[in-house]
Image 1 (spheres, rainbow, N blue to C red):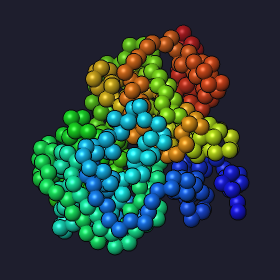
Image 2: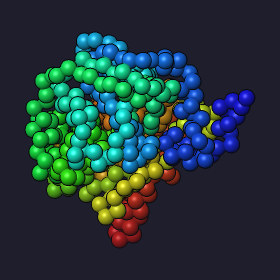
Image 3: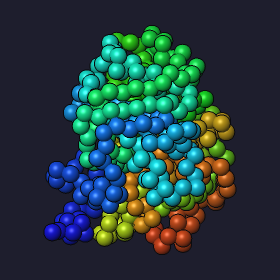
Image 4: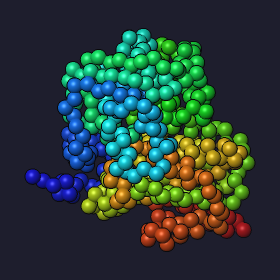
Length: 409
């Protein structure tokens, strides 16, 4: 039997970094890295029903689009289960702790067309009622058949196993008044609804209501797969913040930030400028997508006249951008932004882009000043023994500007 290491030797590491198990760019029917995660977790899947308190939680798959699997998720636990859906409260948890928590969320689903929210049936209305709940809700799923695999994605936090729901029941609960008001406003555009909800409403709640087709004009409402909805919400909110901060004055000096957690290390620099954003990821040997192969990196760069729509590094691009733009909004400044993400062997499985968003948010809590972009890259070189200047479009532009200035002077 071919080992995973032998199998990966025939796949370019750059392909895995760009694919992250979602696009199957290697041509295989299933990602061998994700398949290994399935086999090593030992999650029980022979289940007939699940009873517990949903955080609340809902899962929407992407396979079969434009018909998708949609349904509730719940643990076999009663009481306050809200932490299952609150990545912002996972600060002291390890990769294994988070995986154990999320893999114990059992899914139930039925197949619906993505257009179902424009004329929702009773099942979808029950799901909407669950999502509107402001507290965990007692729920029960009875299965007609079960699915033996868990769900792992580079974009979304993982879910446990599940299957087709024969019956779904949940108790009534008090609703989140802010979300409920916007849910029943069927003349409000989805993009305007997101702006009204954020930041007072948790982004993890916003992702769920967006995914379940609960926002926008009634005739335009659609179900969005979970992993797609996360990126869509991050991008939409980021676009709104960019328009806002560009009217602010530039930052004074070069602001530097750093944070490290669960095998991910972030170096962030904000420099004076109108606006640009670059994010570079370096996946080191032994990390989830490299395995035994050599380290490799990828990155994306945007500026107002050329914005990134489909980043090579996936949803991490928008998840990393959002908390920095929120920082600049509060500071009432604009600037050119550079993010370096280094992923190490401790990051043993994909947990979703929430950890990019939360780790960058933590990094923004402590700022220092640097003399130059050279000093920024020198800090990384000294600490990590890697010089990433040649990979950075931002560095290239700064150096070119200096050369032009020197020539004019």
